[in-house]
Length: 91
Image 1 (cartoon, rainbow, N blue to C red):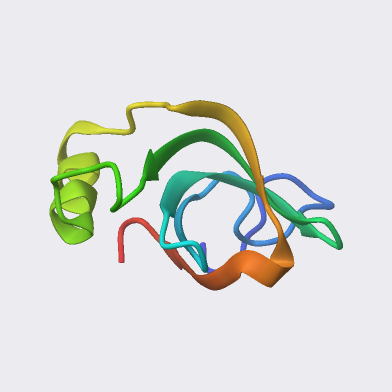
Image 2: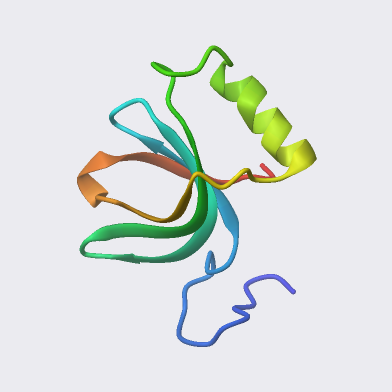
């Protein structure tokens, strides 16, 4: 059902696995919880840091889509000032 929010009181992305690109070059993939004045809160987060990984980001994302999320962080808050982009993992 388009536009349906499973948990009333939450936004449309609540519970959806998203890809967040940050200004520091990292990419985080996790379950969207909410966006507040503090930033975006994700749960069960995988982190791609190009400075620490030999795997290109797009290849890493393909593996996540195919095999699932290998959790690096239980929770992560990405400050609004560090957000470059947000999209659903399935897109």
